[in-house]
Image (cartoon, rainbow, N blue to C red; front, top):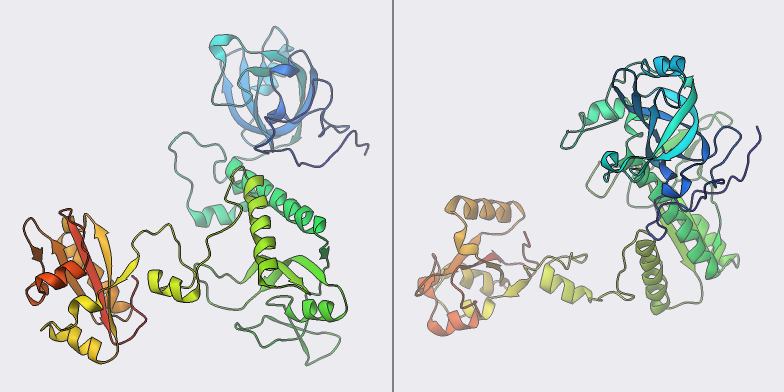
Length: 436
């Protein structure tokens, strides 16, 4: 097959490049079978003779005139079959096309009448007036729809996974995969410019003593022996360092035989980096630059450096060594406020070396008793002894523990003067509080 002017897909869905960069006569996607992607056509292409290939996304038969939306990986374009430009037999065949049929179309790009332009389509100012088409791949009625109207829900996930070839035709998933491709290329460029070598390491390897179970693969050549799939390229990157390859990276596939969790699955991809003759600041600078470059590629600018927290500070403020700092309800220490009071629960905790910790919730006084009880249930399920419920009422502090607190203790709590602030704290003999 002859390929004409075929170049990589770097520009597709690139937020830095308006639409795509093809001209009326050439496209980076041109081949012997097509001249353009339908989704890249714009007003600048009006008058161009084009060959397109794609899937029938929607059809509208108006009795003598047929319109269809042709879909390819660049998006949608309207194709019209009108007696003014299309032979009658072609119109008749177009009227019988079913959804998801793959066709090759020849025609001319034309401007739509102003009243027929569609601002919701990137190609909404133009259409392709077809002269002829061929069916490349006939289609049965799809098991799940690819085209969806506004507000229309997706089919059940089980169906979408069963018919994954149809689900992957959705523009959301196609854009996700194309973005992933661009992010991988950005990673490679960024690290290559800094002298890192991309080195591929074996998948069939020996077991290593890491945190999760290995997937094992029996060997036919060596009966009774097994390979392990790598949890990470740990052995090999260490080998590369002592062999003198002082800067290595790999977009590595990793396998871990463990139960599914929010941040864990059996196989995943990680950017694996190893370097020699460096200090901590070198790693900070490298990773901050890489992450900024990745976000920039996705059209998002982020600060060039990140906020840094010590482990002790993170645990003290958030109760986690990997906090989401957007979460504004930071922990505070209420031990001094309760020290010396006659409240037996806090006295026992403090006497045992524990602490009284709390979270200040703006407008928390509006929570119902049921909602507060649910919060207490969560606290206990996470290991806390219980919750002290305190809120600032119209005239005084309210809650089961309020009567045990002196005016000085209330002031030490540093509660907001705004009415409707609820304080909740966990009681535990541990210095590692519940963070809920």
